[in-house]
Image (cartoon, rainbow, N blue to C red; front, side, top):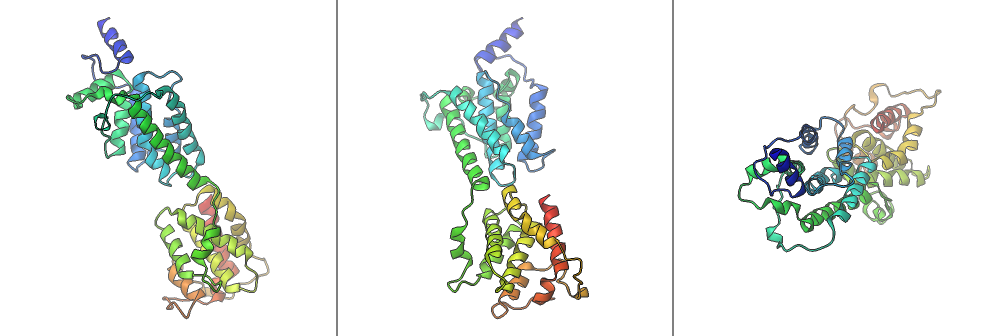
Length: 338
């Protein structure tokens, strides 16, 4: 009975009772393991599903420890959600909704602590996620106490401190949601990708796409939309420009992980490029561009041969614009989007 009394007292007033075994609930251990795998870059399953699961873990009437642990855990998880590795808007929506539900429970009264007296977060998000889970149970709090024998651990429960974490995470998540999934305005990109004479600044455009091949670049996503819209607006009087723009879109769609709204916007263009007229014969044989070309160098030379040196295995516009070759690139791009 004394053991149950200690557990109950620690639930009501965390960190006020000693002598509780450092036993962590199996459900907490399992959830922490799954979340840590995401934050460390080696997820066991779908990272978006895991973050949404974590966001839905706030009970309607949480105890002090559960509320503190929830806020600390979501704050630790925010960097992954805002990094661009998550391509589903609903995941950020779930995390935002969870923090919005937690804020009213934290009240608005200031605390008596200085900023320096609030806990220091770990530089490792995985360490902060672990602290968040240890805060949620008497056994976890006992384990946390054994690691920090001299630290005033009750300050992890400070509502003023937790409000700061929640507001910081909310601001970052809302900004990322607008950036990644909001309405994109690419009109200002004309000044970046067009020269004063109206021709493409092909070097600036292909360099942006080249970076997208190795990194999740939102600049490149905006550029692929710009290239697709420019392609649709450019008449048949500029066949070389249309060809280069089409190749840029196919290249980026096939190599970079595009956000869903960008993929949907360019899908019709890709479907059109994949459709080869049945009566069109290919006369190029082995003269198509190489299987893994240096697209940046090839397209720079294709568009502006007087400015850029010809790369190895260079090909002319006829080979690059072959409907059969373009259909193959478009098929790869559509498979990547799917």
